[in-house]
Length: 65
Image (cartoon, rainbow, N blue to C red):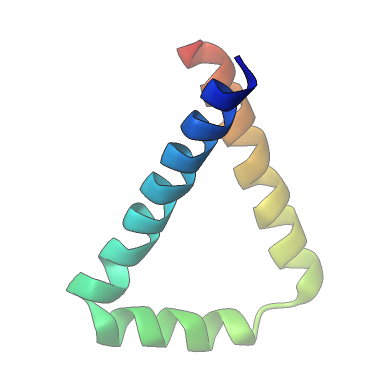
């Protein structure tokens, strides 16, 4: 059982890397501009966005399972 968990976690991590790489691959200049804009955003705003993203992922995971 535990090896199944690590295998699925590895698959999930690989899929995340693939999805994260799509935008820089297809639109490198737009991605660079986005990163520059994000560098100017306040830390508190980034934390709220990160928390909202984690919460959305948790809710979607619950709904899928």
